[in-house]
Image (cartoon, rainbow, N blue to C red; front, side, top):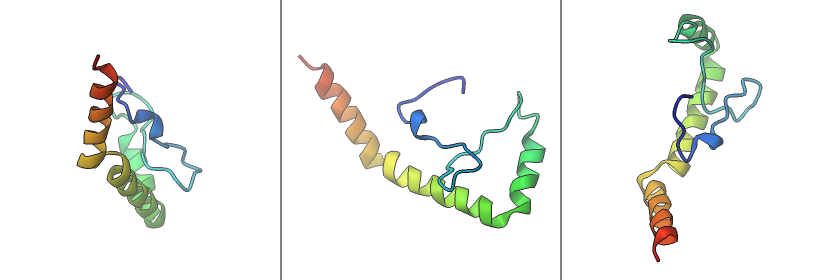
Length: 80
């Protein structure tokens, strides 16, 4: 990824993992996107599992309350 955020280390793009929560396309400029999408569309169960894991990831780590907590801790840490 070109830019990193505080939650990126929590992404799991391992296609052999049952906890995969993100799909990263190989190549540049989405060159491999059609093949990646075709593979996901061919395997509904796997695509649904990734989507469910992604939603759980969002609800736990990126909900408004979680993001507020992150920023609160950052501000408290840096206050004198």
